[in-house]
Image (cartoon, rainbow, N blue to C red; front, side, top):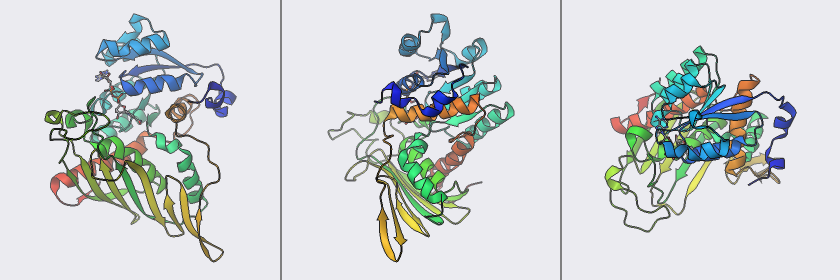
Length: 369
Ligand SMILES: NC(=O)c1ccc[n+]([C@@H]2O[C@H](COP(=O)([O-])OP(=O)(O)OC[C@H]3O[C@@H](n4cnc5c(N)ncnc54)[C@H](O)[C@@H]3O)[C@@H](O)[C@H]2O)c1
């Protein structure tokens, strides 16, 4: 983990005006701890309220942020009504993103919501509409946008070195990584399995890298063949409750975009693969390559060459990455700057995710409106 002197971005120091940005956190489980840690490096931020339906879960926020009992709530509507806040940070399970986001936006609060933005396109649309109607910034927690690998490839794309991106292959595969905790295997709350939980990260960064083309059709299937049975192997995270698992083990999809580009998706909590992989590869008219480790395959002065960066800053660390994504939202809201991962970007990704599930259920290609 970086120490304060390196993790506090120079942008942050230069801009710090002494103004405060008051935040309430909704959902105080696992990921909220990473958020609270990251906020320590954003001097404008003051955590002024917390909410969780399970009171004990707020203990770490209360201690870390010095909250009084009256600043801790079990009902987010009461928190939004009673506390004066600039922003609300939503770290609840996927199915509980939309309602608090809309309520917070309607109360005039800027909104940060963890990924995936929602569990349906309708929900994502409601969130974008509420943010727009209330003129607040809505950001989605896609931290891969801030990775050095993404910056390297995006810079090459922007100067035309890669030409037109025709194809990307997105992979988010675990060999045996079915989460035995939380709501990740309860479709009613999670909205789905590996596609919406881990696939979403690689889909969104690849989609943005492609230039965010408009998805028009999806052909997909999903399968459950391990998680719905008792766990029979040793695995890192221990045994899952197969009786409560109703999400896919594997999702495979092909997405067609308005500009003719194609995205292929492979996402799994459990698949017979060599090892875990989170990556995308791409083919452009002038250059191809891969996200991690970053490489570009191209032609130079009559020779086919492979280009690898000599140096990139190390931004793999969650503390640094979450700091960047939360700082982008806080500064976007405070200084009216554009967001790198906005609600609109989340909505485009949501259309792909739900298109995949829709196509799998229908057993045919579906159109995306
Ligand atoms: N960006 C990332 O890499 C990343 C990593 C992990 C999780 N996440 C996302 O963060 C979100 C939370 O994940 P988590 O791992 O912290 O889950 P978690 O189960 O550990 O925490 C969720 C918390 O929300 C609370 N909650 C549920 N309903 C609520 C409600 N109506 N009001 C207030 N609180 C409520 C639960 O009691 C729980 O404490 C999910 O959307 C997940 O996909 C993102």
